[in-house]
Image (tube, rainbow, N blue to C red; front, top):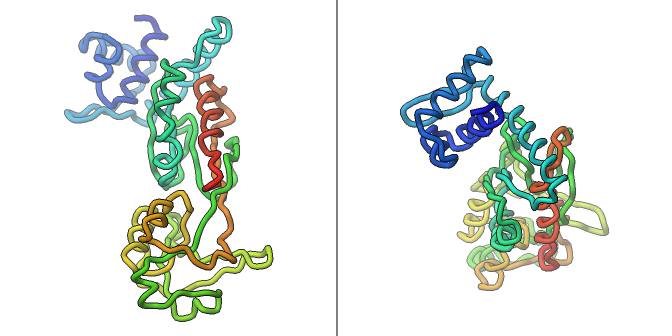
Length: 298
């Protein structure tokens, strides 16, 4: 096995966290996989993988080597594609925040995969900020204001939000018609995973943002728990319309104070500028920019 093929095999082991699965995926005998990695570690003079009976994971040196292998393999693939006119292909790693995948990406995913039959895709859904380069992620879809970084950002749209509550909550606490009517109400707290701070209720009043903090009995960190707590009548909340459209249609949540809506929130796709943009990533970005064009929500 030449060095290029060995790199491909090593990348597959890291991605699959298994020698056996990587051997199966690549059609390589299990004994050959072990031998190739041992030769690679001897040549480099470092241990690349931690091996246990249950899982294989890269060492710090292994993670760094994995990133270099990805870059080299991507460059070779792009060079071949440029001259051969080949369609995008390869494994695409995407990080998606919260419920964006379920509402925007998953409905159109069969179309994407049919359009690009040589691309396979891994989607991770996490709300924490990850280092795309360090974790081998091709691109990420993010909700909200973004911290400064070296990543390239392409905005997909601005998500509409609504102030809402359950009918049971409103029957108990009253239906506010103005912002002044919010006195005596409580909210479901949405806490930041990074700072622990609870997000206030924000309203656009005369083109300016007015923030209002209310008492609360429950606070959460995840969008599904936030929605569930609101459905249970535990307080007022402000959520993206796409996340609660079905609840509004069924009447399990009620929108209010629509003359003073919360400010919209940007939805963006990010990718590392240091990495040559592979054709499969470019294809996904172009497709995602269409998937997020929904006038009901954006």
